[in-house]
Amino acid sequence: METSSFDFGMIGLGVMGRNLLLNMADHGFSVIGFDKDLSKATSLESFASPGTTVKGVSTLSEMVKQLKRPRKIMMLVPAGPIVDYVINDLLPLVEENDIIIDGGNSHYTDTLNRIKFLEDKKIHFVGMGVSGGEHGARTGPSIMPGGDVEAWKELKQILEAISAKVNNEPCVAYMGKNAAGHYVKMVHNGIEYAIMQLISEVYDVLKRSMGLNNDELHEVFKKWNEGEMNSFLLEITSGIFLKKDDQSNKRLVDMILDKAGSKGTGKWTSQDAMNLPVPVPTIDMAVAMRDISVYKDERVNASTLYNPKIKPITKNKEKILQQLHDGLYAATILCYAQGLAMLHKASSELNMDISLKDVVRIWRGGCIIRSSLLEMFTTAFKKNSQLPNILLNKKVASLIKKKIPALRKIVSLSTASRIPAAGLASALSYFDAYCSENLPTNLIQAQRDYFGAHTYQRIDQEGNFHTEW
View 1: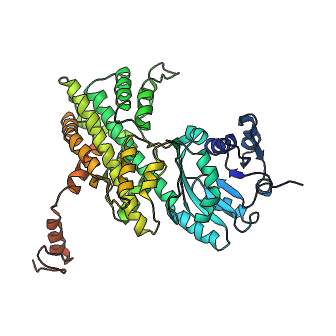
View 2: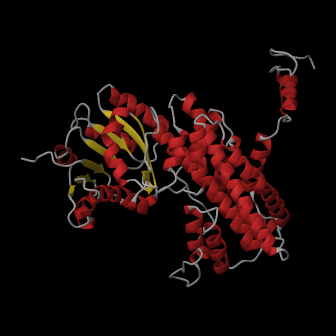
View 3: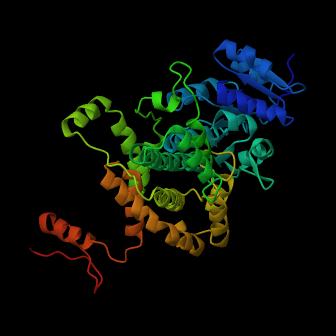
Protein backbone atom coordinates (compact mmCIF):
# COMPACT_ATOMS: atom_id res chain seq x y z
CA MET A 1 0.00 0.00 0.00
CA GLU A 2 1.34 3.40 -0.98
CA THR A 3 1.97 5.83 1.88
CA SER A 4 1.38 9.57 1.81
CA SER A 5 4.99 10.64 2.14
CA PHE A 6 5.64 13.42 -0.38
CA ASP A 7 5.54 17.14 0.46
CA PHE A 8 4.81 18.53 -3.00
CA GLY A 9 3.51 17.38 -6.37
CA MET A 10 4.13 18.84 -9.83
CA ILE A 11 2.05 18.38 -12.96
CA GLY A 12 4.09 19.24 -16.05
CA LEU A 13 7.76 18.25 -16.07
CA GLY A 14 9.07 20.50 -18.79
CA VAL A 15 12.23 22.41 -17.95
CA MET A 16 10.47 24.89 -15.61
CA GLY A 17 8.39 22.29 -13.76
CA ARG A 18 11.27 19.86 -13.41
CA ASN A 19 13.70 22.52 -12.20
CA LEU A 20 11.30 23.91 -9.60
CA LEU A 21 10.69 20.42 -8.27
CA LEU A 22 14.43 19.66 -8.10
CA ASN A 23 14.97 23.00 -6.35
CA MET A 24 12.48 21.92 -3.68
CA ALA A 25 14.24 18.58 -3.31
CA ASP A 26 17.58 20.33 -2.88
CA HIS A 27 16.05 22.20 0.07
CA GLY A 28 15.03 19.01 1.85
CA PHE A 29 11.47 18.52 0.62
CA SER A 30 10.27 15.20 -0.77
CA VAL A 31 8.75 15.77 -4.22
CA ILE A 32 6.84 13.81 -6.81
CA GLY A 33 6.02 14.70 -10.41
CA PHE A 34 3.72 13.65 -13.23
CA ASP A 35 3.77 14.38 -16.95
CA LYS A 36 1.65 12.97 -19.76
CA ASP A 37 4.93 12.46 -21.60
CA LEU A 38 6.09 9.27 -19.89
CA SER A 39 9.74 9.89 -20.80
CA LYS A 40 9.74 13.11 -18.74
CA ALA A 41 8.30 11.32 -15.73
CA THR A 42 10.69 8.37 -15.94
CA SER A 43 13.77 10.59 -16.43
CA LEU A 44 12.94 12.98 -13.56
CA GLU A 45 14.87 11.07 -10.93
CA SER A 46 18.03 11.03 -13.07
CA PHE A 47 18.26 14.83 -12.77
CA ALA A 48 18.02 14.81 -8.96
CA SER A 49 20.91 15.69 -6.67
CA PRO A 50 22.34 12.75 -4.65
CA GLY A 51 20.55 12.22 -1.35
CA THR A 52 17.34 14.00 -2.35
CA THR A 53 13.86 12.45 -2.47
CA VAL A 54 12.45 12.75 -6.00
CA LYS A 55 9.99 10.47 -7.77
CA GLY A 56 8.37 10.48 -11.21
CA VAL A 57 5.05 8.71 -11.81
CA SER A 58 3.02 7.81 -14.86
CA THR A 59 -0.48 8.64 -13.59
CA LEU A 60 -2.12 11.51 -11.72
CA SER A 61 -3.74 9.14 -9.23
CA GLU A 62 -0.32 7.69 -8.29
CA MET A 63 0.94 11.17 -7.54
CA VAL A 64 -2.08 12.38 -5.58
CA LYS A 65 -2.23 9.24 -3.40
CA GLN A 66 1.35 9.72 -2.26
CA LEU A 67 1.04 13.39 -1.17
CA LYS A 68 0.75 14.49 2.44
CA ARG A 69 -2.44 16.31 3.42
CA PRO A 70 -3.33 19.01 2.74
CA ARG A 71 -2.01 18.10 -0.69
CA LYS A 72 0.06 20.74 -2.48
CA ILE A 73 -0.19 20.28 -6.23
CA MET A 74 1.28 22.68 -8.75
CA MET A 75 0.52 22.83 -12.47
CA LEU A 76 3.11 24.11 -14.92
CA VAL A 77 1.23 23.55 -18.15
CA PRO A 78 0.39 25.92 -21.05
CA ALA A 79 -2.07 28.67 -20.12
CA GLY A 80 -5.63 28.37 -21.36
CA PRO A 81 -8.02 25.41 -21.60
CA ILE A 82 -5.31 22.87 -20.66
CA VAL A 83 -5.30 24.27 -17.11
CA ASP A 84 -9.03 23.60 -16.82
CA TYR A 85 -8.62 20.09 -18.25
CA VAL A 86 -6.01 19.30 -15.58
CA ILE A 87 -8.21 20.72 -12.81
CA ASN A 88 -11.11 18.55 -13.97
CA ASP A 89 -8.81 15.50 -13.98
CA LEU A 90 -7.73 16.32 -10.42
CA LEU A 91 -11.17 16.87 -8.93
CA PRO A 92 -12.06 13.17 -8.42
CA LEU A 93 -8.67 12.65 -6.72
CA VAL A 94 -8.37 15.58 -4.30
CA GLU A 95 -10.19 16.37 -1.07
CA GLU A 96 -11.37 19.40 0.86
CA ASN A 97 -8.57 21.78 1.91
CA ASP A 98 -6.14 20.47 -0.71
CA ILE A 99 -4.25 23.18 -2.61
CA ILE A 100 -3.99 23.48 -6.39
CA ILE A 101 -1.49 25.98 -7.76
CA ASP A 102 -1.32 27.36 -11.30
CA GLY A 103 2.28 28.46 -11.87
CA GLY A 104 1.89 29.30 -15.56
CA ASN A 105 1.23 32.64 -17.23
CA SER A 106 -2.57 32.46 -17.03
CA HIS A 107 -4.70 35.53 -17.62
CA TYR A 108 -5.92 36.83 -14.29
CA THR A 109 -9.60 36.65 -15.30
CA ASP A 110 -9.23 32.90 -15.87
CA THR A 111 -7.67 32.65 -12.41
CA LEU A 112 -10.63 34.48 -10.87
CA ASN A 113 -13.03 32.02 -12.50
CA ARG A 114 -11.02 29.05 -11.23
CA ILE A 115 -10.88 30.43 -7.69
CA LYS A 116 -14.68 30.75 -7.63
CA PHE A 117 -15.20 27.32 -9.22
CA LEU A 118 -12.99 25.53 -6.67
CA GLU A 119 -14.09 27.61 -3.70
CA ASP A 120 -17.52 25.96 -3.86
CA LYS A 121 -15.76 22.59 -3.63
CA LYS A 122 -13.64 23.76 -0.65
CA ILE A 123 -10.43 23.36 -2.68
CA HIS A 124 -7.85 26.14 -2.33
CA PHE A 125 -6.62 27.63 -5.62
CA VAL A 126 -3.52 29.78 -5.94
CA GLY A 127 -2.54 31.75 -9.05
CA MET A 128 1.22 32.14 -8.84
CA GLY A 129 3.64 34.03 -11.03
CA VAL A 130 7.17 32.64 -11.35
CA SER A 131 9.99 34.67 -12.90
CA GLY A 132 13.57 33.72 -13.58
CA GLY A 133 13.47 31.31 -16.49
CA GLU A 134 14.77 27.76 -16.32
CA HIS A 135 17.97 28.75 -14.49
CA GLY A 136 16.03 30.75 -11.91
CA ALA A 137 13.62 27.87 -11.36
CA ARG A 138 16.54 25.61 -10.44
CA THR A 139 18.60 28.03 -8.36
CA GLY A 140 16.06 30.53 -6.99
CA PRO A 141 13.27 32.40 -8.80
CA SER A 142 11.11 35.36 -7.82
CA ILE A 143 7.72 33.95 -6.85
CA MET A 144 4.41 35.84 -6.83
CA PRO A 145 1.57 33.89 -5.17
CA GLY A 146 -1.84 35.44 -4.63
CA GLY A 147 -5.37 34.51 -3.67
CA ASP A 148 -6.11 32.26 -0.72
CA VAL A 149 -4.29 33.43 2.46
CA GLU A 150 -4.75 30.06 4.17
CA ALA A 151 -3.12 28.33 1.21
CA TRP A 152 -0.24 30.83 1.33
CA LYS A 153 0.38 29.92 4.98
CA GLU A 154 0.68 26.25 3.99
CA LEU A 155 2.99 27.01 1.05
CA LYS A 156 5.13 29.69 2.69
CA GLN A 157 7.87 27.44 4.09
CA ILE A 158 8.50 25.69 0.76
CA LEU A 159 8.30 28.82 -1.40
CA GLU A 160 10.57 30.85 0.87
CA ALA A 161 13.12 28.04 0.84
CA ILE A 162 13.33 27.76 -2.95
CA SER A 163 13.11 31.45 -3.87
CA ALA A 164 16.02 33.74 -4.66
CA LYS A 165 17.48 35.61 -1.67
CA VAL A 166 18.57 39.25 -1.43
CA ASN A 167 20.20 40.30 1.85
CA ASN A 168 18.94 36.97 3.22
CA GLU A 169 15.34 37.99 2.41
CA PRO A 170 13.35 35.50 0.28
CA CYS A 171 12.09 36.85 -3.03
CA VAL A 172 8.56 35.62 -2.45
CA ALA A 173 5.63 37.24 -0.68
CA TYR A 174 1.86 37.07 -0.63
CA MET A 175 0.84 39.44 -3.43
CA GLY A 176 -2.78 40.00 -2.46
CA LYS A 177 -6.33 38.75 -2.78
CA ASN A 178 -8.08 37.02 -5.66
CA ALA A 179 -5.91 36.86 -8.80
CA ALA A 180 -3.20 39.22 -7.49
CA GLY A 181 -0.37 36.75 -8.15
CA HIS A 182 -1.08 36.38 -11.86
CA TYR A 183 -1.90 40.08 -12.18
CA VAL A 184 1.47 41.11 -10.73
CA LYS A 185 3.23 38.63 -13.03
CA MET A 186 1.33 40.02 -16.03
CA VAL A 187 2.50 43.56 -15.25
CA HIS A 188 6.01 42.24 -14.55
CA ASN A 189 6.02 40.84 -18.09
CA GLY A 190 4.73 44.13 -19.51
CA ILE A 191 7.63 45.98 -17.87
CA GLU A 192 9.95 43.30 -19.24
CA TYR A 193 8.64 43.91 -22.78
CA ALA A 194 9.21 47.65 -22.40
CA ILE A 195 12.77 47.48 -21.04
CA MET A 196 13.78 44.98 -23.72
CA GLN A 197 12.43 47.36 -26.37
CA LEU A 198 14.42 50.26 -24.91
CA ILE A 199 17.64 48.24 -24.87
CA SER A 200 17.08 47.14 -28.48
CA GLU A 201 16.61 50.75 -29.60
CA VAL A 202 19.83 51.86 -27.92
CA TYR A 203 21.57 48.88 -29.53
CA ASP A 204 20.24 50.05 -32.91
CA VAL A 205 21.76 53.51 -32.43
CA LEU A 206 25.08 52.01 -31.31
CA LYS A 207 25.23 49.56 -34.21
CA ARG A 208 23.68 51.23 -37.25
CA SER A 209 24.42 54.87 -36.50
CA MET A 210 27.61 54.74 -34.45
CA GLY A 211 29.02 51.66 -36.22
CA LEU A 212 30.05 49.65 -33.16
CA ASN A 213 30.99 46.02 -33.80
CA ASN A 214 29.89 43.13 -31.58
CA ASP A 215 33.00 43.20 -29.40
CA GLU A 216 32.52 46.92 -28.81
CA LEU A 217 28.81 46.41 -28.11
CA HIS A 218 29.70 43.75 -25.56
CA GLU A 219 32.07 46.13 -23.80
CA VAL A 220 29.55 49.00 -23.72
CA PHE A 221 26.76 46.93 -22.17
CA LYS A 222 29.20 45.15 -19.84
CA LYS A 223 30.47 48.50 -18.54
CA TRP A 224 26.94 49.85 -18.11
CA ASN A 225 25.92 46.73 -16.19
CA GLU A 226 28.85 47.16 -13.81
CA GLY A 227 27.63 50.63 -12.79
CA GLU A 228 24.47 52.24 -11.45
CA MET A 229 22.30 50.66 -14.15
CA ASN A 230 23.12 47.07 -13.11
CA SER A 231 20.37 44.66 -14.18
CA PHE A 232 19.82 41.13 -15.41
CA LEU A 233 18.69 42.28 -18.87
CA LEU A 234 21.84 44.36 -19.39
CA GLU A 235 23.95 41.45 -18.16
CA ILE A 236 22.54 38.98 -20.67
CA THR A 237 22.62 41.61 -23.45
CA SER A 238 26.37 42.07 -23.03
CA GLY A 239 26.90 38.31 -23.24
CA ILE A 240 24.74 37.87 -26.35
CA PHE A 241 27.20 39.80 -28.53
CA LEU A 242 30.01 37.28 -27.88
CA LYS A 243 28.08 34.14 -28.80
CA LYS A 244 29.29 32.54 -32.04
CA ASP A 245 26.95 30.77 -34.44
CA ASP A 246 28.13 27.18 -34.89
CA GLN A 247 26.77 27.08 -38.45
CA SER A 248 28.15 30.26 -40.02
CA ASN A 249 31.00 31.07 -37.60
CA LYS A 250 29.60 34.61 -37.39
CA ARG A 251 28.16 36.11 -34.24
CA LEU A 252 24.80 34.50 -33.55
CA VAL A 253 22.97 37.81 -32.94
CA ASP A 254 23.64 38.79 -36.56
CA MET A 255 22.13 35.55 -37.84
CA ILE A 256 18.82 35.90 -35.96
CA LEU A 257 15.84 37.12 -38.01
CA ASP A 258 14.39 40.43 -36.81
CA LYS A 259 10.88 39.07 -36.15
CA ALA A 260 9.95 39.03 -32.46
CA GLY A 261 7.76 36.41 -30.87
CA SER A 262 5.47 36.87 -27.89
CA LYS A 263 3.16 34.82 -25.67
CA GLY A 264 0.57 37.53 -25.15
CA THR A 265 1.36 38.78 -21.65
CA GLY A 266 2.59 42.16 -22.85
CA LYS A 267 -0.60 42.57 -24.86
CA TRP A 268 -2.66 41.63 -21.81
CA THR A 269 -0.92 44.35 -19.80
CA SER A 270 -1.75 46.97 -22.43
CA GLN A 271 -5.34 45.83 -22.76
CA ASP A 272 -6.01 45.81 -19.04
CA ALA A 273 -4.28 49.16 -18.54
CA MET A 274 -6.72 50.66 -21.04
CA ASN A 275 -9.62 49.11 -19.15
CA LEU A 276 -8.58 50.57 -15.77
CA PRO A 277 -7.61 53.15 -17.31
CA VAL A 278 -3.90 53.74 -16.59
CA PRO A 279 -1.39 55.04 -19.15
CA VAL A 280 1.44 52.60 -19.95
CA PRO A 281 2.60 53.98 -23.33
CA THR A 282 6.05 52.40 -23.30
CA ILE A 283 4.57 48.94 -22.71
CA ASP A 284 2.00 49.68 -25.45
CA MET A 285 4.77 50.70 -27.82
CA ALA A 286 6.89 47.66 -27.02
CA VAL A 287 3.95 45.44 -28.00
CA ALA A 288 3.37 47.50 -31.18
CA MET A 289 7.04 47.28 -32.21
CA ARG A 290 7.02 43.51 -31.81
CA ASP A 291 3.91 43.50 -33.98
CA ILE A 292 5.51 45.61 -36.71
CA SER A 293 8.60 43.38 -36.69
CA VAL A 294 6.42 40.49 -37.89
CA TYR A 295 5.75 42.30 -41.20
CA LYS A 296 9.24 41.56 -42.52
CA ASP A 297 8.31 41.28 -46.20
CA GLU A 298 6.42 44.58 -46.12
CA ARG A 299 9.30 46.26 -44.30
CA VAL A 300 11.73 45.06 -46.95
CA ASN A 301 9.45 46.44 -49.71
CA ALA A 302 9.04 49.75 -47.89
CA SER A 303 12.79 50.01 -47.41
CA THR A 304 13.24 49.64 -51.17
CA LEU A 305 10.49 52.15 -51.92
CA TYR A 306 11.58 54.87 -49.47
CA ASN A 307 15.31 54.07 -49.39
CA PRO A 308 15.99 55.43 -45.87
CA LYS A 309 19.59 56.38 -45.20
CA ILE A 310 20.86 55.96 -41.65
CA LYS A 311 22.76 59.08 -40.70
CA PRO A 312 26.12 58.07 -39.21
CA ILE A 313 27.36 59.52 -35.94
CA THR A 314 31.03 60.29 -36.28
CA LYS A 315 31.66 63.06 -33.73
CA ASN A 316 31.48 63.30 -29.93
CA LYS A 317 31.11 59.54 -29.59
CA GLU A 318 32.13 59.41 -25.92
CA LYS A 319 29.65 62.15 -25.05
CA ILE A 320 26.88 60.39 -26.98
CA LEU A 321 27.69 57.08 -25.28
CA GLN A 322 27.14 58.76 -21.92
CA GLN A 323 23.88 60.28 -23.16
CA LEU A 324 22.72 56.85 -24.34
CA HIS A 325 23.54 55.43 -20.90
CA ASP A 326 21.73 58.17 -19.01
CA GLY A 327 18.79 58.25 -21.42
CA LEU A 328 18.32 54.48 -21.18
CA TYR A 329 18.50 54.75 -17.38
CA ALA A 330 15.82 57.44 -17.28
CA ALA A 331 13.56 55.56 -19.69
CA THR A 332 13.95 52.35 -17.67
CA ILE A 333 12.76 54.14 -14.52
CA LEU A 334 9.78 55.42 -16.51
CA CYS A 335 8.91 51.84 -17.55
CA TYR A 336 8.82 50.75 -13.92
CA ALA A 337 6.81 53.87 -13.04
CA GLN A 338 4.12 52.96 -15.58
CA GLY A 339 3.85 49.34 -14.47
CA LEU A 340 3.83 50.12 -10.74
CA ALA A 341 1.22 52.86 -11.23
CA MET A 342 -0.92 50.26 -12.98
CA LEU A 343 -0.59 47.88 -10.03
CA HIS A 344 -1.50 50.69 -7.62
CA LYS A 345 -4.72 51.40 -9.52
CA ALA A 346 -5.60 47.75 -10.10
CA SER A 347 -5.09 46.95 -6.42
CA SER A 348 -8.10 49.04 -5.43
CA GLU A 349 -10.19 48.81 -8.62
CA LEU A 350 -10.03 45.01 -8.70
CA ASN A 351 -10.06 44.51 -4.91
CA MET A 352 -6.68 42.77 -4.71
CA ASP A 353 -4.89 44.74 -1.93
CA ILE A 354 -1.49 44.45 -3.63
CA SER A 355 1.45 45.55 -1.50
CA LEU A 356 3.79 47.44 -3.85
CA LYS A 357 6.47 47.37 -1.15
CA ASP A 358 6.47 43.57 -1.34
CA VAL A 359 6.23 43.54 -5.13
CA VAL A 360 9.40 45.58 -5.69
CA ARG A 361 11.17 43.79 -2.83
CA ILE A 362 10.70 40.34 -4.34
CA TRP A 363 11.62 41.57 -7.82
CA ARG A 364 15.12 42.42 -6.57
CA GLY A 365 16.36 38.86 -7.03
CA GLY A 366 15.71 35.89 -9.27
CA CYS A 367 13.41 37.60 -11.77
CA ILE A 368 13.99 38.79 -15.33
CA ILE A 369 13.47 42.49 -14.48
CA ARG A 370 15.72 42.50 -11.42
CA SER A 371 17.70 45.70 -11.25
CA SER A 372 19.61 47.84 -8.77
CA LEU A 373 16.79 50.38 -9.18
CA LEU A 374 14.48 48.12 -7.19
CA GLU A 375 16.40 48.83 -3.98
CA MET A 376 15.50 52.52 -4.34
CA PHE A 377 11.87 51.65 -5.13
CA THR A 378 11.69 49.35 -2.08
CA THR A 379 12.85 52.20 0.15
CA ALA A 380 10.32 54.54 -1.47
CA PHE A 381 7.36 52.22 -0.85
CA LYS A 382 8.50 51.47 2.70
CA LYS A 383 8.32 55.22 3.30
CA ASN A 384 4.92 55.57 1.59
CA SER A 385 3.08 52.31 0.91
CA GLN A 386 0.30 54.18 -0.95
CA LEU A 387 2.57 56.09 -3.34
CA PRO A 388 0.50 56.25 -6.56
CA ASN A 389 3.52 56.75 -8.84
CA ILE A 390 7.21 56.21 -8.14
CA LEU A 391 7.95 59.52 -9.92
CA LEU A 392 6.46 61.33 -6.91
CA ASN A 393 9.26 60.06 -4.64
CA LYS A 394 11.84 62.80 -4.03
CA LYS A 395 14.89 60.55 -4.46
CA VAL A 396 13.56 59.17 -7.75
CA ALA A 397 12.71 62.71 -8.87
CA SER A 398 16.26 63.86 -8.09
CA LEU A 399 17.68 61.04 -10.22
CA ILE A 400 15.25 61.63 -13.10
CA LYS A 401 16.08 65.34 -13.19
CA LYS A 402 19.74 64.44 -13.78
CA LYS A 403 19.06 61.85 -16.48
CA ILE A 404 16.09 63.22 -18.41
CA PRO A 405 18.11 65.77 -20.48
CA ALA A 406 20.06 62.83 -21.93
CA LEU A 407 16.82 61.06 -22.88
CA ARG A 408 15.74 64.18 -24.78
CA LYS A 409 19.07 64.20 -26.60
CA ILE A 410 18.96 60.57 -27.68
CA VAL A 411 15.33 60.75 -28.82
CA SER A 412 16.28 63.74 -30.96
CA LEU A 413 19.46 62.02 -32.13
CA SER A 414 17.62 58.83 -33.07
CA THR A 415 15.00 60.75 -35.03
CA ALA A 416 17.66 62.72 -36.91
CA SER A 417 19.52 59.48 -37.68
CA ARG A 418 16.33 57.72 -38.88
CA ILE A 419 16.63 55.09 -36.15
CA PRO A 420 13.14 54.09 -34.92
CA ALA A 421 13.08 54.80 -31.17
CA ALA A 422 9.38 54.64 -30.38
CA GLY A 423 9.93 53.15 -26.93
CA LEU A 424 12.37 55.85 -25.84
CA ALA A 425 10.14 58.58 -27.30
CA SER A 426 7.03 57.19 -25.58
CA ALA A 427 8.83 57.13 -22.22
CA LEU A 428 9.84 60.76 -22.65
CA SER A 429 6.32 61.80 -23.69
CA TYR A 430 4.87 59.96 -20.69
CA PHE A 431 7.19 61.91 -18.39
CA ASP A 432 6.40 65.25 -20.03
CA ALA A 433 2.66 64.60 -19.88
CA TYR A 434 2.74 63.38 -16.27
CA CYS A 435 4.64 66.49 -15.22
CA SER A 436 2.40 68.92 -17.15
CA GLU A 437 0.01 70.93 -15.00
CA ASN A 438 -1.92 71.71 -18.18
CA LEU A 439 -2.50 69.46 -21.18
CA PRO A 440 -4.25 70.30 -24.49
CA THR A 441 -7.12 67.99 -23.52
CA ASN A 442 -9.36 71.03 -23.10
CA LEU A 443 -9.39 71.29 -26.90
CA ILE A 444 -10.29 67.60 -27.22
CA GLN A 445 -13.19 68.13 -24.83
CA ALA A 446 -14.36 71.11 -26.89
CA GLN A 447 -14.19 69.00 -30.06
CA ARG A 448 -16.15 66.16 -28.44
CA ASP A 449 -18.83 68.56 -27.27
CA TYR A 450 -18.95 70.26 -30.71
CA PHE A 451 -19.63 67.09 -32.74
CA GLY A 452 -21.24 64.83 -30.15
CA ALA A 453 -22.65 66.96 -27.31
CA HIS A 454 -20.46 64.96 -24.90
CA THR A 455 -20.23 67.92 -22.45
CA TYR A 456 -17.20 69.28 -20.67
CA GLN A 457 -16.19 70.56 -17.25
CA ARG A 458 -15.09 74.13 -16.54
CA ILE A 459 -12.11 75.45 -14.59
CA ASP A 460 -14.19 78.04 -12.73
CA GLN A 461 -17.27 76.12 -11.53
CA GLU A 462 -18.55 72.61 -10.79
CA GLY A 463 -20.75 70.56 -13.09
CA ASN A 464 -20.97 69.37 -16.69
CA PHE A 465 -21.68 71.82 -19.53
CA HIS A 466 -22.72 71.75 -23.16
CA THR A 467 -22.47 74.54 -25.71
CA GLU A 468 -24.37 75.02 -28.99
CA TRP A 469 -21.27 75.61 -31.08
